[in-house]
Image (cartoon, rainbow, N blue to C red):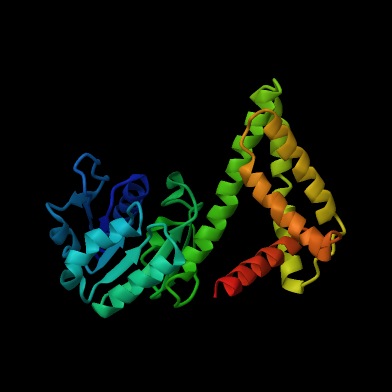
Length: 288
């Protein structure tokens, strides 16, 4: 029998984690702030939070955010002392580092994790997880690929928010595009096949962007910023003519125009990351 585990939080992801731990042979104790969540198969529900934490040497936390994690764990600092805390709650890198510092001050071993795949993948070869801070094999029962990113406890969260940025910005584009299409009496089912084709360009964009940033060569051999700015302006004009909020693309267009106005109109899209960093630095310098 493998070592006991405790899972705090029985939302969909927490439920899946606990079920995977139990299926892997870990005696698994669970706890949730509200009683309505079902107990995962093979798990034991603790009568209270302290009983859950003391049920084993390792505590996995999966809550809505770091504020919830702190509110749950802070009163139990002495109970957690000497245990391993694995936090797979989504949040910012700074929040992860702050929680790691709190854990260290109470002699609690801390690992911060990020789960990059949906709930149905947990316990299967399709799962993808990251972790940083204290090295651990605790996430192995979740299946799939596990990547340790080093001792900086904020590094897993940094990867997580960067990848979520790609996802949610892309989803926002999908939402906006379908609204524009419907405003022009284009059925969603008409747009979808062509939209999938456009989405298929994203891997190329990612690889090209990464290569440009790594080499410092931002040549716009395939597409340049002057052309990109013109395309964005057409979308903004069309959206606003139909009363559709275009603030997200307006921000992207403003960034692109700044790069063009700075003399980089012939460069490719990777120049925009450099321009964004330059703008952040200049803003911070003026503020200082």
